[in-house]
Image (cartoon, rainbow, N blue to C red; front, side, top):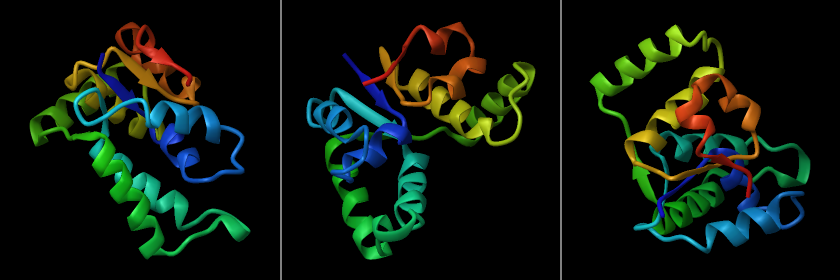
Length: 141
C-alpha cells in the first residue's frame, strides 16, 4: 500500500500537544520510503508552518530543518515535472479550483502520480474539488 501524507498530517507529528499528534505520529511511523510518500512541496509547507507557529510553538529554521530531515528519511518525495505542473494547473482550473486551493490540488496530483492508494489529510474539504479520483483515496488518520 502506498500512502500519501498531506502537510496537515505531517505538522502535528512534531508537536506533542497538538490535537492530532498521536494519530498523525502513529501513522507516520507505520510507513517508510517504500510505502509512504509526500509532495516535495510539503517540505516547504512544513518549514513555513513550523517557523511561523504562534507563541511557544514557533521554532527556528534550524530546528525546522531537523524535522524536515525526519520527513525525508521516512517518506519518499514526489514532485511534478514542469509539464505535469502545467497540466495539473489546467485540470485544476477546469474543476474550478482557485486561490490557495491550488496547493492542495498540486499535492493531489503528486499523490496520483505516486499511485497512492490513500491520501491522508486532516483537511478533507480542501480536496473536495479535486474530483472523484482523489476523493475515493482520501482518508483522515
